[in-house]
Length: 259
Image 1: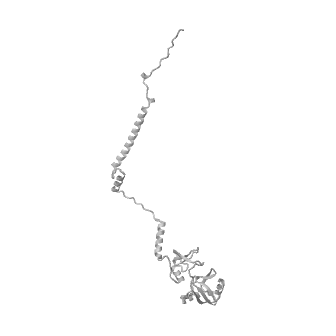
Image 2: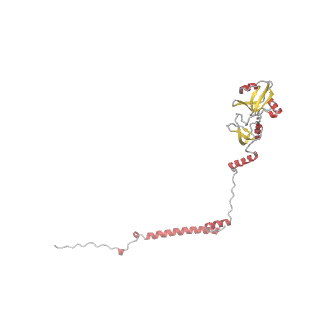
């Protein structure tokens, strides 16, 4: 034999007296009447919930009928506005929804506030653009069962988030730079690596180094000047001619010939 499924609907009886309010707000979701909030205070709904916790009316419950009226959302509202005793048949929502009737999905937000109990730190959020969040306690209270949440420890999550944000923002303090000390051992190793001469903390060595550099430059200039002088002296056009080496051609002698 097949077992009967447990009915997910329940009924409650409340009396709405003259000038009083039931203490609930509703919204039409796909033609159905969904409870979006339950007002605090001494209202008929709050009194019923306190006396019947197993049949307490909760946010996101759907009102199926009121005093036998179940034709439409407007028909149910008209019946709820009457000052009389009401027999309400309600049904639990399978999944918690936002105020617009969208199903909430796991989306942890450490700094968001629950739209039901106003507690900081939420685990579920509307994914259809509504700014609606819900904490774990409210979600569990609405579903009347354990919460299968991917995040088990909010404190650990918050600490990891702070670390990630800190890395992203970087260090905002002014840096303090300390000069690294160059000791003799490190300088000797560096000079040995590159084949440099090493002298530690001596002014004479620096003077000799600069003198050698200047002497090298002077020798280079002297060599260049000597080279240019020799090159100019060897040019043929620049050699003077001696007087004895100059031969002057004699003018031609004209002779008379008798014919």
